[in-house]
Length: 125
Image (cartoon, rainbow, N blue to C red; front, side):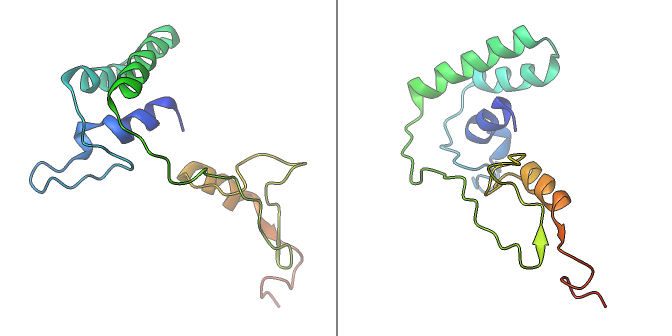
């Protein structure tokens, strides 16, 4: 996940179905501007890190100045799992992902890392 993903999810006008008005983004306040739309597009069009940082800075300024945000959860990174059948979970010693990977990429990393404890623990014969 990148800063682009965060701001696109919140400020991306392309995530609003023009016919229904239904948002497909998470946490989308439906607060759009031509400037933020252009900034989001330009971020994807450049590989120049300096330009990307400039664009993210502009999006951040717009966000803190215009978006009303009320967090409903501290978004803790839980590390709750069972090693009865599977091992390879992220933990304090092997912190390769959040303990509660809520983004698709983090979930894929965890899904690829966990494996059966032994040849019989996952129902194999």
